[in-house]
Image 1 (cartoon, one colour):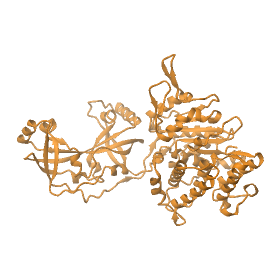
Image 2 (image 1 turned 90 degrees about the vertical axis):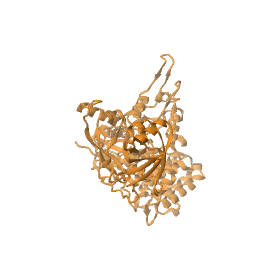
Image 3 (image 1 turned 90 degrees about the horizontal axis):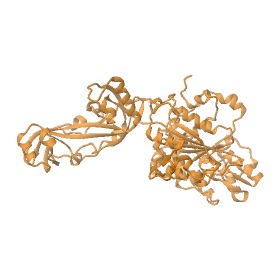
Image 4 (image 1 turned 60 degrees about the horizontal axis):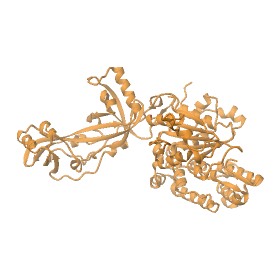
Amino acid sequence: MEVNSFYNYLISEGYCFDKELIENYLLSLKVKPFVILTGNSGTGKTKLSQLFAKFTNSGLISLKPEEDYVKVKGNVNYSSWNSMGWTLEKNYFRGFLPIKECESKCELVVDGIPAKGGIGLTIQLDYTNPVLMDHLKNLCDELGIKKFSQKEYPIDIFINVEGIKKIMDDALPIDDSIYLTQNSNKSAQEDRQWNMDHDFFKYSPFRKGKVDCKIIVDGILSDAKLRVLSKLTFSKNERLQTYLKEHDGEKVNIKLNLVDFNFEEFEPEWDIVDSISIRSDLTGGSEDKYIIVPVGANWTDNTNIVGYYNVITEDYQSTPAYDLIEDAQINMGCPYFLILDEMNLSHVERYFADFLSAIESGEEIPLYGEDKTLTLPNNLFTIGTVNVDETTYMFSPKVLDRANTIEFDTLSAWDYMVSGLDGDDFKGNIEYLQSPLVDSNISELNIQDLKDILSEITYNNDSLWDTLAMELTIFQETLKGSSFDFGFRVINEILRFMVVAWRYENSPDEWDNWERYFDAQIKQKILPKLHGSEKAIGNVLTKLFNLCLEERNNNENPKNIDINKEDCRYYTSAVKLQNMSKVLSDQRYVSFIN
């Protein structure tokens, strides 16, 4: 059976989940690498996490990058894997970089000595993914390409357009001449050439140094760095070469009169590639890249996750979770999943505080008894499952603040056995949805970045940004009086979720379906912290319930009204608040996980 979506994969494994729940889970992974799954035992929380971890590394899917890419040519050779990079042919860049316009013959004068020369360019590309390095090395071994071999094998390299654009820079206007200083060195004296230093780049349309980009080679995605090097050469000139030897190591002044240096009117012509597959079977192998760790009731520190230094053996005692994190650090091109099963059997703050801090700050985790630290890589996702019963501890607000909390309702027998097995009919970009490393930098977007994106989207001819600002303010003000207020972190993460949801729905200019995803964020980010007695939160639940209705000003009692989707702006949140109100009325106390 060919499986091209996670939903179909679940069905092939004999499992069925609500499609909106799947969307919420996968979108939440993009916003932050920590998700809490809560619900009754047997509702499939751990199984969903496990199967998605298997699916992402199974080789069953191909991913379309969210960015535009252009294709250039490279070669598989010894240097391509040993040095993790290439010097690329300039011809392939001439459509979108002013290569020809900047390679110029010139007249130069060095400390008064005239010479004839020219400006040449070199393009270098370095990558970081060790999986790509191993792949290219294996190709070299198969092709018999050795260190000093002249054999080369042509290969397509796809570079993202935005990365290439970054290498372009504003240059100073050139009147008649350029004045530079360079060192008199062996290369200039014997080879008659200089690698141009930073002074030249003030007059060049290219940046000095490397710029970040992304590349895809044989379906393997990697971060990379691109740079353009400028070289000044001059014809054989005994007088100048003798002079340079006499002034070895000293600065010399160079005056350049350029003949053809004319890049101002260059217009790039991007030959954008429509679709590129990122093959998950080449991003580190098909072996499982997840681990399920049952949390023990006796956990009081983080040693059960990250290990400890054994003073008896004088060696570091690792754990399966620690080994998984180390593997993730090596294979940055594929996602890894740490699944903490029944996470609230012990107090989360006791054993997971360092993780929460590291996820939030990006700082390293200090290891017990060792003069070293542990870094959580960006491709590591932590999933915590929470069973709802009397044996478990409720999470504190500071834990819930740092995660999306997704509730698993019990699926009806009819949906599970019959209607839930309908085919895959997701309305959005399914490849984007089920690719956790695509758009993984969303957590780095600040409030201004988010405003730039969401302000361009409209709803009922108004800015979606203003609409979201009003909605968040209303919910925030409602919660303020009950000490369940939320701050910058929650606001930013809700807005990031809205961005990835919008992109999942193919980035419409007018977005009519935004309330479905804002509803998910109310339930996942705002409601989980609610708990207390009827006196403490009874009025708050009622106010929040009415905010979820189309008619907000009727002050409806959630215990006495039958609601349907047509009556609600935020249906799933309204249902949850109604259920909480009923539990509160019966038991005089309620929390989100009741």
